[in-house]
Amino acid sequence: MDDRLLIARVQAGDASAERELYDAHVERVYRLVYRIAGDPDQAQDYTQETFIRTFDRLGDFRGDAALGTWICSIAVSVALNGLRRGKRLRTREVALDEAATAAVTERRAEPDLRDRLARAIDELPEGYRVVFLMHDVEGYTHEEIGRTLGVQTGTSKAQLSRARAKLRRSLADFARG
Amino acid sequence: MIRDDDDQPLEAELRDAARAYHEPPPVPREALWAGIRARRALDRPSRRSRHVWTWAAGIAAVLVLGMGIGRLSVRASRPGPGASPVATAPTPAAAPAPTPGVNPKDDAAAYRLVAAEHLGQAEVFLTLFRASVREGHQERLASATARQLLATNRLLIDSPAGRDPRLRLLLQDLELVLAQIAQLAPGRQSEDLKLITDGLERDGMLVRLRAAVPAGTGVHFRQGAL
Image (cartoon, rainbow over the protein chains, first blue to last red):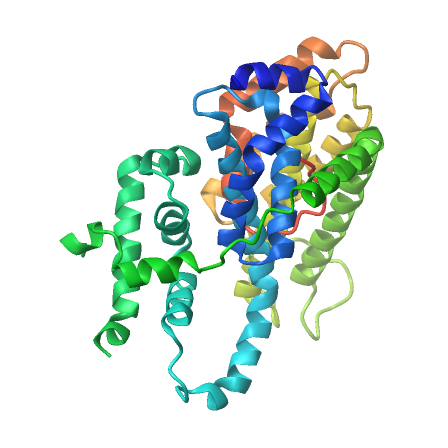
């Protein structure tokens, strides 16, 4: 359906149009925020917040990009802001936990590739991580990423290259072993 | 340095492993939709009262800020041990003398903290003010809140701990906007309101405030969909 028509119906108060808009985009939004957050409760919270903001701000949508891209940009913003807030609270707890368990876990068993890669992805700078997840994991194009994150396509490509380089470096010994 | 192979897709093994990273479960569509509807339904009737509470929270927060700055000022001007308790003529000074027991670095840090909090409050206030104007609301408490913010703003401008010229300029520009809002007279607001909001846009005040407020500064207004 044409985005503009759908938006007009939502703005006119058509409840079924709200549901249509939600159905059309929820899969993408949920998958994206889940990839970023990695937690079902947070993903649920961020998805809901994304659609609440979407409905509230629909009047601001200018149609420069596809509606789905605009909604994804809200989703990324909601998820990253949420994670930044949560990170500050968790940092101290994690540091204490790691100090307590470091002696126990030191390379007794080599973690498998997934664990190593997951940790390496977690350690990527935020911008690299988001671009990597969007492109290499969720299959977004650089054009879509650029419009979603508000960056140039070239920036998206450069960040992806750097993300891959960092991941390859992090996993170099694994590849050799 | 980016090598050529970094432009190549990851090796198949890595790619497969990456797909398992934070792999999403099936989307809980109905639960999500129910949550969205519930939150929106809760939000709707409270939207009007939220405005009132927002202004009230703003006033309370500004009062607390004012008290905090007051305490800082008292501490900074507290006489050292052995000083006479009687009033003395002020001595001219080019720069504030360091107070014994008060580390200038602490003062600067405290100032930055209070300034960040104030700018955050001002940003939320101006955002809500602009939204209210767009929605055609007449916020009776806007002028009162602006006056409270104005008082804090003036204290920050006058504080000897404020040495950042860019921050000072921002505070001076903010003072002009707050003064305009504080002077709004009931009844003939529409033109004046438009002038103020046009000025906000033209000067990029909100953008400058957002840029000046460090990420994570706790601003305890409910921001809704802002």
